[in-house]
Length: 223
Picture (tube, rainbow, N blue to C red):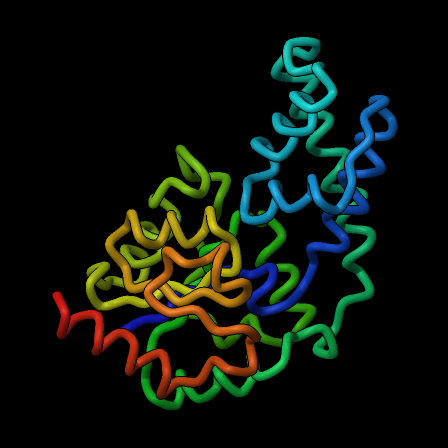
């Protein structure tokens, strides 16, 4: 195992609440009501695809030009960026900072494979930016999760083969993305929802460098 590829939201920090509030504000302006249950569909999904889901819910999918949709997505992002200004190292999820340090001390490469275009900014606010060896820019991808491209790109940017990586996610779309990239998958959250992962843990503080290496080894012994 040479590298560990991380999702951001729900793994390193939890910005889902900020995303929900920003999308809810935009949806209300369009006369669309969304709740936290609907928001589950948006987790791990790109900004563009999230907007399409919201417009579809409001039966407005064909009411806007591409330029207008881009403007709507940009306005949501501006709202979101104002909300995350307050983030700090206190917002790192339990056990993650020590996990990243342990992996670096063990000479593993770290990559960020997040649909969030604000990933670099958030990592800097958390004080974790310098621990990462690469960050995939989702704006440069042809498809979002569950397409495998983002994890394939992260491996490529690190100079690794997919067989040398582990991917860590908290969303079903993300787990599918990892699996389709032929990367060992570890998920954090509901075991039923995330059952497609090679390993599921309940919370981030259960993730350790030893666990990740063990799961990678076990998966390759099976294969």
